[in-house]
Length: 301
Image (cartoon, rainbow, N blue to C red; front, side, top):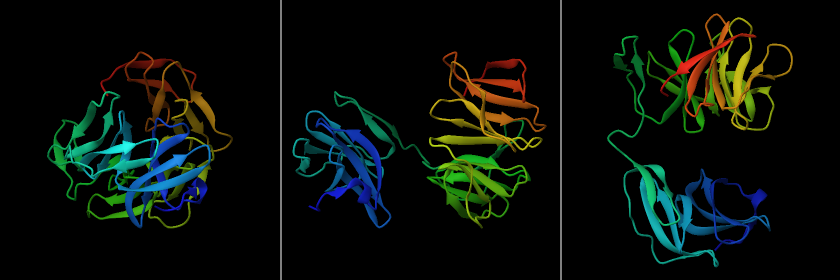
């Protein structure tokens, strides 16, 4: 077994922490571009990381003495001694075609989403009558798509990377690492979440420029074409913030519920957003920059 290393010295990405019934120790998935993911145990009191010879990800301990984890679309359990921090015997396959990582209850009950047909997303056009037309191209794990102002290009996430997709030619290329891409009004830059909020030329040329330098998971959602303001929200407190063209970022909407996904109208005079203060997500619209009444009703999301 490799010698324990300081947590800060690890050159691999550490992800998906899970508790162990041992004080100050947690399970960790170690990820590296040079090889497969595997298991490690982090000792939080000593700040040390010990790697174990078990390949997979999303490791979870289930009492008494079982370690459950995932390899691609398969799920395996193996006997595990938390006190020794070691597994015993060989893993046994119990589930195949698993689309989402299983969640395991204390009694061993497992909840998971199976793969049904095509497991990857495809891009489609939907017209005002609801008719769907597929966009040629491969299926991938697309998410957080934003259409360019001219309607010919799309920024989208595949995993933790942002890609530029030409919807007419079908080409695709990586722009930058990050999440939640949003076009600027001119259609030449990608705004995204990484360390705070940044933007970069949409063709990937040039360097990132920081727009909002705040710790926490910030999600840019919309630019105001009239004022140049950027709307975003925080996953820490679920308030809608504005990064103005001039001046400091400030809260524009807060409430008893979780507010998110602020979107400006084309003329910049209205701001639509989502709020769950009633217990269900509902869409509201308010005048921008206000003050003004809140208009809303129930919408199934």
